[in-house]
Length: 316
Image (cartoon, rainbow, N blue to C red; front, side):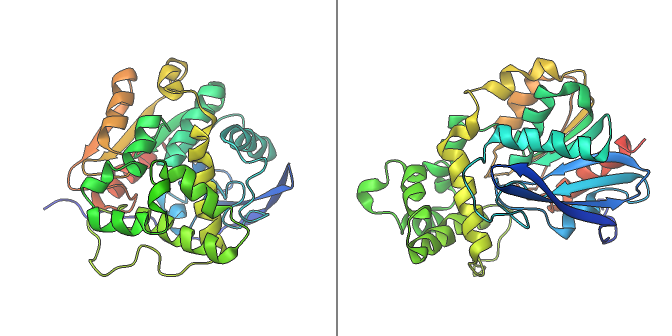
């Protein structure tokens, strides 16, 4: 029988606040664990989803000083759903601002899905600031990856959920769904934005885990936070995350000396294994962990087990 996956006990932040980073943005941050522990920054997914208390439990609170923050426009950051001044490179700069705020020279960087994209962008820009990388469900924002999820690739496995995703978009506009959703998610009418956000987040919510209950809604309720998540995620994908095609893969040589673990669910439909496999081939020094019987979510049993094993190993 396989080992039961475990997460560390629930903890509360010992310090938190908002940091003004320009362009009207104030990002929420919190510190958890041991103030004298090994510094690590957690980068949430989405883009636009925000952090949750579950993310604090990926690190040994006795050995780590964990910084979590909600990226621009999402979670507890302000203003909610703001798209101006909200790019990948703004977020990379924010990570550096937070590091300077904490007065740490170097830290571990942990990111899953979009968080892995941001972790790679940050590490390739500031390799001297990174002690280790832990990446899960790698997404590199290449056109092929965006097309897989929003141009019908994943739809072959979820035709029923895909039909619901298509529903808000007029047939004439379905040639480019990301652009069509952009129009609706930025519509002046909140009812239009709300309906689009429900479909956008529902599609992702129904495909993120290996097993989903047949009657489970992708989005139980829709709020301003949900609309912000959909708007921000769509905003990044419309702009290819402000990355040149293959940029993160091309520049991996800048970080090959950094110890790293890459965790991948075999049956991840959101960020298929072919993406992280390509990264592992360009970065043979990284410890690549393919998890059988798992999808995309960090909470999938085998994925959670590998992530905590990685943070335990790097705790020092």
